[in-house]
Image: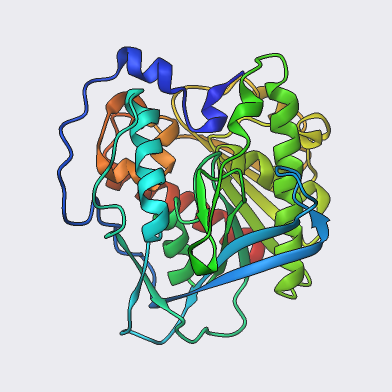
Length: 340
């Protein structure tokens, strides 16, 4: 298995990575870079229930529930700024990040204090082209906020998704936390690819459902990091409303890995070439481009690159430079194929 699709191999990184300095922050663990666009940003959190599907990752025939967040241009320049994660998610997310990088789970103070640039429940500008963001395995919907905010500030409505029981811990209204239930299914190396393909198809169905709930009729785009990049490709294959997609350093799984795509598709990756990419590139029949970001590693495309924890996990490129480059690639791509 290429474990970069599941953020990273904690054991491999622990064997070679430097020790992380003692973390005693009481302030925000990092600060997101300012969005590069003409509009202020608003954001709204949604709790959605798909009564037509049962959740495949838990027992009891429970309906599929999702937390989603809208990011969009607004005129509001004041009001409370949305947190990067909720207070209930901050602990599990921080421990997972540290374990991914060092192999040892421990707290990462200051995540609950990180604020995005999105003004909560600000009024949305109408008529925005729609994009969907799918995070990496274990990651939550706002793990790509540095990229999402940039696109919202440039006039896009971006929908970010928590894929329930795939994310490390997702908080629902009332403080209910739904944990990751998929990790135990990934312990057998012989079945990992099968489980990953199933995850991709579930995520693609999540994306279709959210587009339905938002009343999107056509010409939307989708992008994702790691497993979210594979889900983006699968969603483009499955849903004709999605006319362009992008994968940020993710291994391809699922039916789309066999069939390829006719639609425009962008691949942005790290120096460490993914073994699934050459075969997939050969099956891209429409416009496509592959970009390698020099000095990047798999987690470079996750907001936690701003923590500067480890070059082994995050690469040698300056976080600000990596974010700026990826922003340019994504906005240029979607401007071309959604805005002409």
